[in-house]
Length: 547
Figure 1: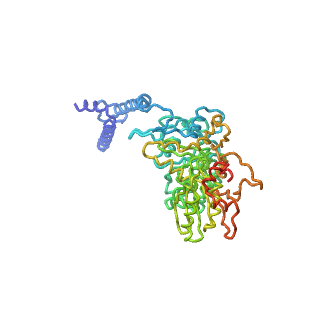
Figure 2: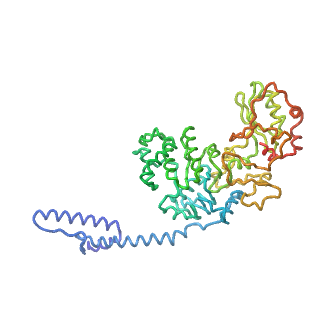
């Protein structure tokens, strides 16, 4: 009866394994004891013993059968059952009645149509989507994105927007629910199996061994990347110098600060010159000096013709590094373009910063601004500084003339800036977490000049649409037709503005206290700006070109 029960329980692999270990131990102990008395009771563990008193042949057979059955069942589940439980691939659509942004739609149409414009792309996401079952959530919803060589693309969004899930799909750590990923025209699974790595990844958390030094970690990564022995020292020294790790290269990683660990992780991602570099918040926890070092390293990557996909919560970093950017909300891309293009397209106001000569002049300056501009919003006041916002529909010539004449009421310095990336980001991510995609923020005026850049045949007649697809971060594109020159050879009366500023687009220096206003400015101070705004010959977009 005991043997019958043992044979029945052989259908359970854990019992078969435990019973085999027990029989092997009993057989060895019995043979060892009897050997002292000159009795040979040794039984080979590979012998076939129907009574299961020493030989393990029947146990081996049962485990082998169950191994084959398990592989067959697992393969059948992956091929037949699991695809049935996945949601059917769906076309990209906006939820809650929101329109798909025109630039995002242009990118999708470009990828779906293919053609010569995709020959130089390093990374291509075709309808990439990723769903989770528990709870049922669509983390990424049908992304269409193509990155070409030498481009730095920033993917922005709040926590939970789907950025890290997208990165996990790109690295092969997570299997996408639908869509396709191509690297240099090769499917992701085949690209990851190539002898030389085609991408590198710097994750949010530092995956570093605390018991080795940064130099040792870089040596190990260089060997993984396939460097020859005569190239190891040169490339490791270059990476250490590029990221400023010379003072810490022989210290154990467990003794390094968080910012230095981030630089080590970035150095590991950049070594080997991979064509695609994925950086997930690379400057988190760094001081400003270290952040500048990282920025220079990332710029050198793009200058070498390699592609960078970046996520960050620092708008200064995005504005400094990115050729293009996109904002993700609830798994969808809600806008796409260069930073300057998005600030122009989505901004609806100008920010004015004023410095007064005396604190007693601030009430007079506030009354003056309210008298000059119908719609003015006072945002901040600190000591001698004042921050206000005015509508972007006002011509810039009107704004500057009014501020030039404000020196009569105590203004010493002022500057006018465009909408910042922080404000654009807050506007578009206000619906994060409620499952909704924000509606298109463009108004009628922006719709006329924000036609998808890849659908030039749909441009309205007479509108010269700028190309926001790829823009060097070191210069701003013209967003309207080239203006005519003034009689004295300048673009406008405000040719003394600073072009090197990133956020401030029109800055006038310190005003001379004894300089008399021109007749035009004096007339502006006497007349109402609202009547002049209605008779202005140039639109705000044309005025913007003058800067």
